[in-house]
Length: 319
Ligand SMILES: [Zn+2]
Image (cartoon, rainbow, N blue to C red; front, side, top):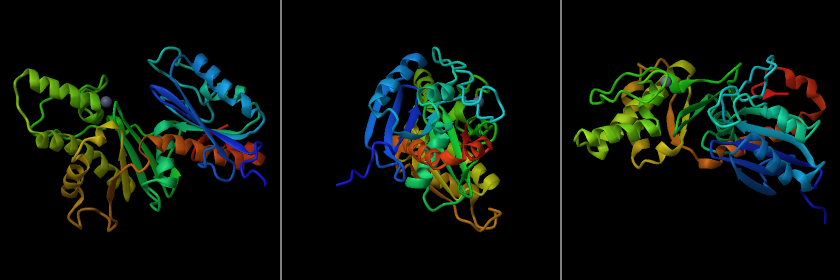
């Protein structure tokens, strides 16, 4: 019997996160049918690359495409000499690290597509998760920071950078006097609604003896997140928005966001569109980025014979 996953027809998906790096091997033609998975902690890039090389050793010559969903900030300008490199990072050794080039050194001649971790997650959700079937859609992660992956007509919006939705200014909740934690702006969206912001606000309230109910906490957080979703809806016509990240595991938050959003984009006539808007929780949870990376790897493998076109600004940065 023929092995359906011939060893010469494999793809590699990589997701680099703040604490760990995930590697998964799938098959050309069926990228998310994983045949192997492995992870390592995010240490220096040299050590991580050495671990990846060890993982790939038994698969030498079998990988036909690579997809990378990487933490940023990442240089995704195809005309840049630093294309595919981490630009600035507080992580030891990662500042300026040429990630794409290092992976390509491990697998010479193998086509590779690269995008941000949140864009990879958006693509994973769009193809295999809670965004399936929608055309204009968004994936928002709310955790240590706030990240946005945006697809229009099914294609990721990636120019020379990525959407910086984390830092949009937001209207203040009338009961919230917290200064915010963003090191650039203080009280932007990320400064008021990220995980660290919520923790710092709660500590401040505790220290000043202010008692607030869980319902009031939900109202404040939802007030800010709903503003981002309304902005996506008004600016891009996003018809489905999927929310992930640690903050969204808070019980009752998704319902409160929907309630807040209904006030902001309704009633009909105030929307500027007759299209509906739905807000859902992630279907792939922590898997979305890796699924997206595997799908990119599958596309990279399919494009093997038209490598030159990969230099064009496709929906994903590619080389
Ligand atoms: Zn900010």
